[in-house]
Amino acid sequence: MVRMSSDDPFALALAPPPNETAVEKDARERAEADARKVSDAIDEQIRQERTALKKKKKPVKVLLLGQSESGKSATLKNFQLHYARGEWAEERASWRAVIYLNLIRNVIHVLDLLLREMSLSLSEGDKRPGTSNADYFSDSDFDALSPAPAYRFTDKHRLLKLRLAPLRRVQADLEKRLGPGSLEVRSTTATSASPFDTTDKQGSVPHPREFGINSTNGWRSALDKLRPSQKDDGRPDSAHRRREEENDEVTDVLVGCKEDMKNLWEDSVVKQILAHRKSKIEDSPGFFLNDIDRIGSHDYEPKDEDIVRARLRTVGVQEHRFVMEEGIGKEWILYDVGGTRSSRATWASYFDDVDAIIFLCPISCFDERLREDRRVNRLEDSYQLWRSVCSSRILAKTQVILFLNKCDLLHNKIKRGMRVRDYIPSFADRKNDTLTVMKYFQQHFKEISKLVSPEPRPFFIHFTSVIDTKATAATLSVVEESILRTHLRNADLL
Ligand SMILES: Nc1nc2c(ncn2[C@@H]2O[C@H](COP(=O)(O)OP(=O)(O)OP(=O)(O)O)[C@@H](O)[C@H]2O)c(=O)[nH]1
Ligand SMILES: [Mg+2]
Image 1 (cartoon, helix red, strand yellow):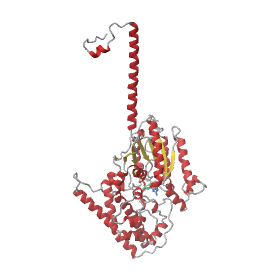
Image 2 (cartoon, rainbow, N blue to C red):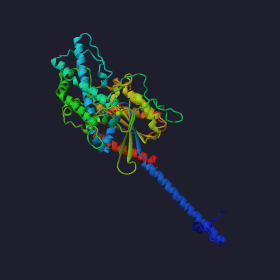
Image 3 (cartoon, rainbow, N blue to C red):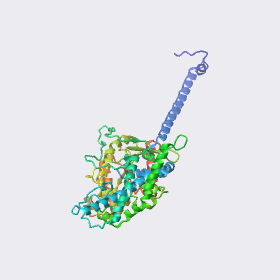
Image 4 (cartoon, rainbow, N blue to C red):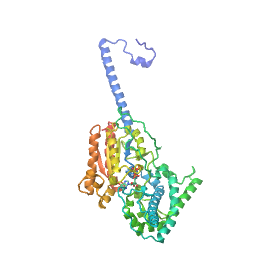
């Protein structure tokens, strides 16, 4: 029995009345039990509200997956363009250097093709098709070249070699300053499409075999290297002045080479060489040769479309935060990963905590091979990757949205007369038009999902050309809504 201190007012107030009858006692105890029930219910309600609040505050997490050059970063840029205008405006000027580098690469590639043909024309009988510097660009890899026609080289071509030479130094300088993302990977063998183990018995996340750079500020780490810095008091420091001078020097060289770059790109012999190689440099990542006038000017300011088209390879996993409209699920985190085969081992560590995956497959690439492994057809690699994602038990309940991307390039290829069945025999004698091809690929993705998913998985498919920012804005608002619904359902808020 608990003894109450007679002078504790609280204890006195709670103590039963001294002359309590049995009936009074029963009534009092019932009243106390009822009060306890109400109090417990209030406690439970508070606990539930706290959990719900925590869930509400949990950011919506989205993982962008797909092979290298599938358009993951370009999709992310579209998100940034619509949901992070401030950040987008801040980064605009820094993209100029990436666009310069992309353009210079185009020019050097074309120049090297020209020089190679010139040197071959001097050593008759050695007209073998080769690859020289050409593997940066996605020439149709399966086309064997017929013997080259006799080109009429003139002094103009020899002069172009000299006059465009300064661009090589600028290219090397920009690559150094932008870091590994500015370089594409080279072909190696023994790579696997899906390094993450999807058949893991316990369903645990396997250890990544290779760690990438885990950057929380996206491509800013690369772009920052080009941005002039400031001292704490806002005044430019010496590093700021040096970077500004370097940036000015790059612009000066580029502007100085403008007419020669145009002369090269518009030259009739160069056109013949490219036509003979069946080279569609126009379709390659970061193609800016048709914009020399605009870009080669001192007051060039990158347009939104230029930034989305600019190519900077993603190294490691980059995290981007977005703040959407007010309300539940207003904070989003998008993870943009490097898509080359050796980068894929890092993906699995993000699998167990994402609300949705946007998986990108560039369906225009049915005739291309992977840069990192020239033996592998790009579309086949995407199918394998999709198979791994769908069959993953950890991802069984994760919402997956499929972007069949680069539809613009697919359409261009079909218009140029490329026949899908020459590369994909199972396409057989279906009608070789863009819509039929799109539907055929779509069907294949659906079938893979049906076949290998651990449980039925409804998913959305969007046909996209993510460099088209207007059309992509409409797609993203649909995607945003459906991801948000899943997020709320996961948080038991619907
Ligand atoms: N024409 C066209 N180009 C596209 C499309 N989507 C992306 N690109 C371009 O293709 C190039 C590669 O796109 P990225 O977004 O860098 O590819 P990624 O998937 O992030 O590649 P990694 O970072 O290497 O994994 C860029 O220059 C894009 O602008 C598209 O739908 N159409
Ligand atoms: Mg990327």
